[in-house]
Amino acid sequence: MKKIICSTDYSPNSVSALKYAYALSRLIKADLILLHVYPPSEVRGGVTSHGKKEALNIHHKKLKTFCEKHLEKDFDSLNISLAVVPGPNVPHSILDFIRDLDVYMLVMGACGTGTLKELIMGSTTKEMLSISPFPVLAVPAEFSFKSLDKVVYTTMFEEEDLNNIAELVKITKPFKMKLYVIHVTNKDELLTRNEMEEFKARISKRIHYDNIQFEIVFSDDVFETLKSTIEEIHPDMVVMLERRNRTELSNILHRDKVKRMQSCTKIPLLSYTASHLNE
Image (cartoon, one colour):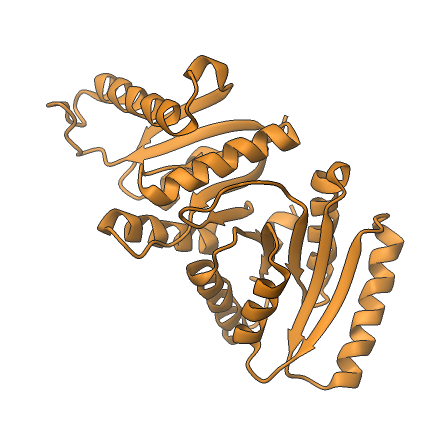
């Protein structure tokens, strides 16, 4: 069975991520692993990296307590697996842990604006967006999972977008989710509308799902218009593709857009990568 990995540093942001990951795993019937990476040199109750076994036990108990407290259930009833690993670099330690697993997505807290720990978690999430071959779901603090009734997918009419949409429909088709496929651009209107029609035709040949709505929005300020369009739709999730196969400049600009969206949105943002889809 595919797995959802939820990485936590015990910050308020990661509490929202835990609750979202747990609800989503129950909804789509996926295994959930809660992961914590701790510094090898960190002292916990007098235990240093030299007492590895005892340090692992201490962190495992803390992770279990964190689960029970925020999910408000006895741990044995949760059907969650716990994993604690030492690592000097949190993003790369997460990547090492999940590399050989069959993963739906990695769930993390989105950027915080409060404590230092929240800001660190935010920077970890941003780095994971850059290096993870697996989809990364960034969950804002205080966000409460209710359903997956509406999902927005932002498209550039690329082949990877078709793969993404096919993956989304596989997961959510049983729930009759409404999928909004939107494209915000400042380019030529006629050319863009033709591209959208071609894209719709490609989707209809490959994906048999009626509950998809397509929309083009023309604006000189693509980022702000994208943000306001998403706010108007008020979806339960936003999905974007982390495009790594472009020219260096366009790649940097698009990645910046994904990270800016992850920093400011109040809605969970799922970021796929082209490298993952092509595996």
